[in-house]
Image (spheres, rainbow, N blue to C red):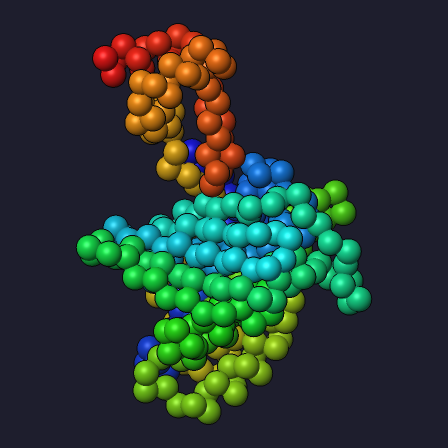
Length: 297
C-alpha cells in the first residue's frame, strides 16, 4: 500500500568539505495520509507527524537494502510511537493511542511534550542487513521529539546534532504543513561552526510555519548553511507506504494453526485483521478460512 504524498520531498546537503551535513524534508502530505489512516486527534497527529518526519530524515543516510525504526515510549497518554523509514523516502508508523488530544499550551501550540511524556526512552534501530540489527537508546529530555532526538544523537551516537520538527494542524484537524531539519557536525568539524549554525537555525524556528510559507527543503538547507560553501548532494520523494498485503496477512492467519482457524470459523464465521502501521483492514470470510484449513490439512 502506497499513498501519494502531494509533493513531499527530502534533500541532503553538505558544507565545509563534507564536515557539515544537512537533511531537510517537507512531509505535509505524508503526515496527512497518516492522520487519515489512523484517525488521529490533533495532538496525536502532531506527535506522529514528528516521528514520521524524523524517521524519513534519518533513513536517507541508509543504503538501499537497509531499514530504520524510530521508537518513542513516554509516560504520557499517547503511549508508544513507532515509525519505519527506508532510504527511498518511504515511511510508515503509528501511535498507540491515536485519540489523545490535550489542551493547548499557554503559547497556543499543541502540547506534544505533555502527550508523549517527559520520562521514557527514545530508540533508533538500524537494520543494516547484518546478523543482528543495531539499536541505540537514550532517555527522553522533553517529549517534544526534536529535542529528544537531538539528545539521542549526541549521547548515543556521539554526533553533535540539531533537530527541528514541526506539524501545523488546521482547525478541522487536517494537516496544514509538516517538515523537519537535521544538521550534524561530523568528525574534524570546527566547534565554532556550531554557533554559526545555531544562529542560522534560529531563523527557521517554527519549521512547520516556514513550510506553510512555501519554503522548500532546499531552501531550508540553504538558510541553515548561510555563510558556508554548500551543495545539495541528493534529493527524493517522501511518501507514506506500508509493505502489508492480503497475501502476507493470509500467511499470518495460516501460521495460527488448524485449531485457532477452526475456532474462528465456528465462533466468528470469519476474521478481520488490521495492519497496525497503516490501518488497512483485511477481511477473511468463512470460505477463506475453509480454504486455509484445506491448505493446511
